[in-house]
Image 1 (tube, rainbow, N blue to C red):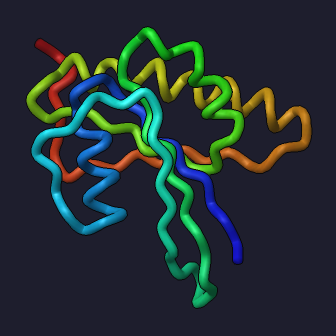
Image 2: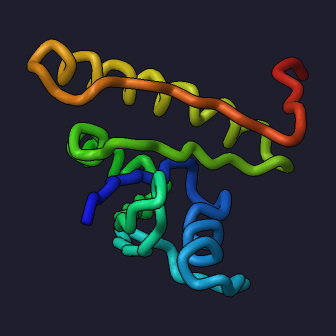
Image 3: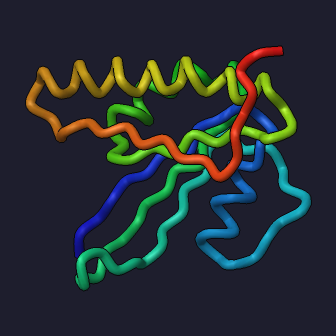
Length: 129
C-alpha cells in the first residue's frame, strides 16, 4: 500500500488539530489540548489504489519551530492553516511556506522527491490594514 506523508502547519489556535481530526474521524472537536505533535493515519484511495495518508499535526508555537525543518524534510505534502479572523495567523504562514521551499529545495539538490506548492482559499484575506 502506498503511503503519503502530509504535515499540517500554522500558528497556535488556528484549528490545525480540529481540521485534522475532522478529516480523519469525521467528528468536530470543540475543545482540544494544545498539541506538541500528533500523528494520524487514514486509509484513502488514490488513482483507484488503496493508500495510507500519514498526517502529522504540529505545534503552532514558536517554541517548537526548530523541529519544523525535520518535519518538512520528511513530509511529502503540506497544509498551511490560518484563521480567517486573525490576520496575523495569515502573515505567520508566509515564513513557513518559505521554510518549506528552502528545505525542500536543499533536498531536491540531494535527489529527493519533487516540490510543489499549492495554495487555495474559498475566501479572500486582506493583506493591508
